Image (cartoon, rainbow, N blue to C red; front, side):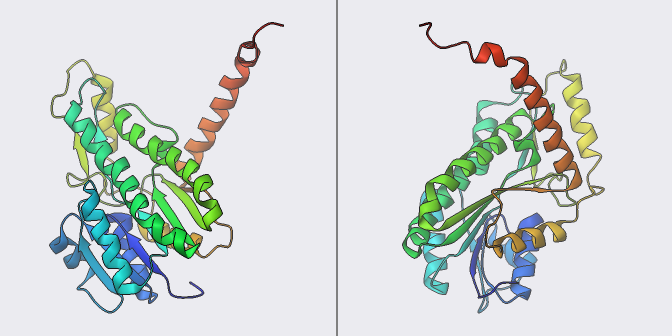
Length: 280
């Protein structure tokens, strides 16, 4: 799989993609640092600490907690070669329904948690002139759907920061990939990984219907998380890994539909767009 053993730091590792990644990497003999909000849950799912495995309890919204995890990873294994920012959760509701606290909490984990990890790991990667940062976004970060505006906003943020990060760190030999999965059979639609607005408004009937459609999909998603984990691992082994990685036929189809729609919208107003310069 890998030409030489690497040290991987994976957030949100107690379930979903994170757990699949941890298990596959440990089988492959890689060094794995896994983080979760709940260390007991992480160890129960992934196993006890070992020669190649360092599980850590980390609060991604706390910069000191993140710094301590990165320091521990570097101290135990001597490097941090790959970071997979996988931690995050879904949040459903119209913008009007979601409180300021609900909205900010989701950004704190989904966006600022990712930024905190990048900020703390970059000095190591910059000094080594190598590394790979993989940010797990969502197809919702490319094209959102009704009822999930704030979730889409957090994932659009992850896509956007990844695009610019790739340019910013290229000179240091650090690569960046942003992953946009579709629907995979993980615990994402369970109560542990999903927040729905505590104060729904009756008039948003279409939003309730959209939520019901997604919740009814739980346990029946087409995507296999083990295949997704393998695809992410394989990307790290590529000499020229992609900046964007769509996972799942649904993600691919939705992204291409958005691309076609944007092209038509942009061209429809091309004359107006080009008419904004000062007249000579």
